[in-house]
Length: 507
Image 1 (cartoon, rainbow, N blue to C red):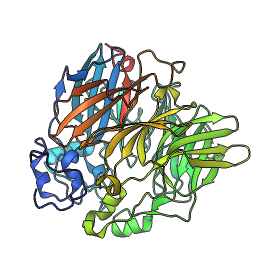
Image 2 (cartoon, rainbow, N blue to C red):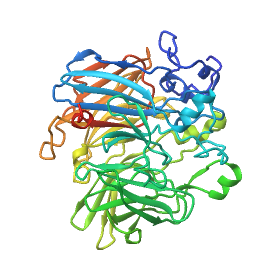
Image 3 (cartoon, helix red, strand yellow):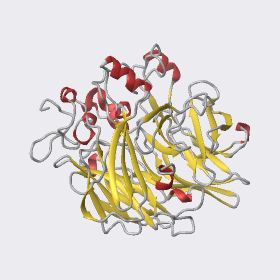
Image 4 (cartoon, helix red, strand yellow):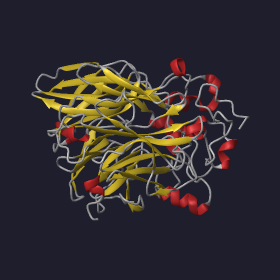
């Protein structure tokens, strides 16, 4: 790989001893793209281990459930320029029960994954295009590699661009097939759909390039679509997340979008941040008509991930990570990958918005300015006022010498004060999104941070990967347990915590 040249400010491609990731496919050596090397290099392994080695500490007895992680893991050499959103989805799961941890990882058997496996090579282009509308299904590859959740007795995997959801067995990670809710799902499902733990309802949206441009819906605990409403927007948008309270949903209309005419002409989606347009958030009654949305205009920004939302009298509060520069300036020296590399250099910080449903007033402000994203909160507090958020510190070129999306530290925020605790993963060690894991039997009456944080890290010094367990009350003391994984776990996107009561309900 000595011919590669887009590596000077990125994660090392080789370990300190000069070795490369031993499980990476041979074809990656020929492609000059940092998202196919180092910790991003795909693995060729599917593994199952019944009992992981404990390197230090002990597994808490009341940690009962599974940490599940979804990420890109391309099987075949791409036909066109590779984007990390293009990699075939792979789930990695660590199961905790009775003080023992087991592990397995599996590819998600999407339609595209199976078709390419049968042909023995890539078929679909990726999100960098060119879009091929003659291909079956999506004109770019729907990889289901972005998010993961548990609903209606199964794991469901989701894709960044709003795609086809897939159903997987919670214990084996075996793909069961498409999830269409008995044929009632007429379109795609947003990457960040929400499962309300109180009502056990799935709240989702879908967006598209034709009027009215957005749909919002609800699936009940039996898997039936009970609500499906069109939402009129000024034009095509690419919202990524949604807010949820007991009585409302918060919809996103951000001025970061593409020109459909340009897409039709060039076969590529060109994203532009329109700094002269406001960001709008629409507060809609949870079971209301699309015409009932109340829109609030805010400072121009893009928002990838919501932390939580709640109601305070006439106010609806939304806390998330806000980006005022979702398309950083590309570096021409990085050639044809420059725009992709710039887009993946995520810039965001912790932020709060407040919307008054009676007066129309908006209050918005920074909670902190540190560059953090991929936030998680105690899932038992979804829709109710919460205090803590567990974010990833996003490394960057200027301060860290890292020019790709990488997580260098775990941050525990106090949303009320903006103060935080910080745990740095270490030199050359990179983390993953870190969900809050309530203790077995916990409720909202339990202290909000009385539980655990579980994450995966990969050490680029020797290509080993570990699962770390933290006491959520005090992350600065470091992990209370460290488990060695059987192979390197490549970079991934989102994670979730599955309760043991859900996983083992039938056993």
